[in-house]
Length: 632
Image 1 (cartoon, one colour):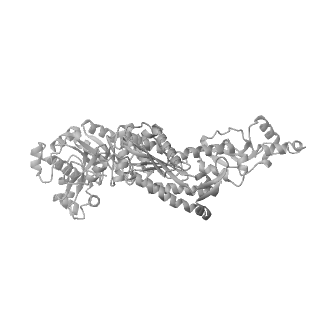
Image 2 (cartoon, one colour):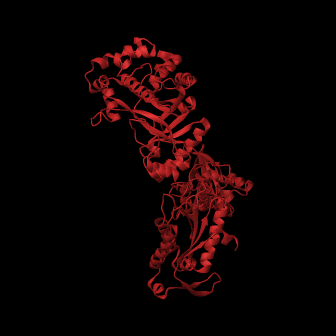
Image 3 (cartoon, helix red, strand yellow):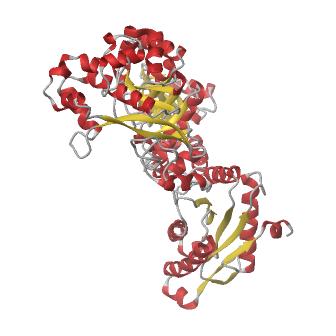
């Protein structure tokens, strides 16, 4: 994260040189004395920041920006600091003092002088990021123009192609078109652009689109604890898609933990910055911190966080809405009967007052009444409203499935028989049937379970396949374990689905407990089938403990007679009553070597075969080599 906006580049020299010496060295004349020194506010200021600027009390530090592909140093960012041990050492205190002493512009000017001059003094040839507010960037071009800007950078020994201006405070941009023209001039000089803190609530997608910076820094809110937050991960994946459109490299700020670095690396983020990679220092670094380098060299694949809830993606828009003609408040019973006879498949009609639905009339109930003796003669010319249910179920097109389930579970079963009225922003659209609703809910639930199992909230088939593909693409060796319960169906039949669900949730808890969440993936295929993809070295020990602990804990779900007998009497799949031992778990494990398989389907297939063999052999854990499976 950038701490400070940097200076206007009309200022040049370092504070330890006289204006005359600097003018002679650069051949530019004494009129180019730094704005910070020429300012009366600085020369006469009594505030602590003005004093620090006059006395050379501020200095730059440099924080590395790292390639997340190989851990090499890509660039450094210049930051400013006050005297060690003082209240002005932290950048926030300096910013506050600049605002209080009305030295914002002078302070920016001073910061860029110190950053560039120090970089040139160190004879560094690497790329340098310096912060500059959008407002000051505009002023730079107005005051000195592109050629002068190149001359200034040359005076410090900084090549334009190695300088990246990191635009801060872009929320203050009032004329974005003019800023874009300024950026075009800057880029023509060979200088690159970066947008700072994108996503902090002030950044603009339009600014990204219009300026097309070479780099965009992702605000640390989205990178902090990303290993634990699936929503942050999804947000960054969306930013990656935008970056691909604009040909922009992303820089993840605020990387402070090993787990976050692993996830950001495996997401394919180009560059990273943060304390875990390297803290700001007086001298540029040659390599990142050892602990971070170990992570970069460790090719084990990170386990991405998953949303721990079932998807609500299914909406009414997926239903085939019946575009049925409505009736009005004054429609007669004879006219309604004619309508039903003309539309033989219409299960009900909506009653509308203008465009607003106010009731629903069931076809069967109405036609039963209409067919009675003398009904037509007495009631035919009268309003059909006597047959209307004035409390119809109204459903907007974009209602999600969870809201629609209320119809299926309602005590008023008329909603299933009558169906419901579909609206769009309150306006009548058509009719929906209970049959269509049941089908839609079922299909949506099945689709949702492919992403996250609704019972355990563990990743379903789609995330499982995606993780296997990531493991295969990385070339890392791993172990695919397929776990399944023994004698679960008789237990479920004997004690009911509620206790059966408890046993499945027990499997999920123990599977998670016996793996390293940073590198081991647990998925729920469905029913009592689970997949564990291990990268941990102690995977075999964890599996054996999993089998043992499940055997101990599952006994508690049986009643006392069953525990004493060691099992239950129940019907098998052929309807024959026989004795079934207490439920246990079998795990088939297959070691997946590098370049041995090319698809997730192949890995899942051999793991399922290993599970089958484990159950057949009665083994708790059966470890097979892929050659053994292929020969079976």
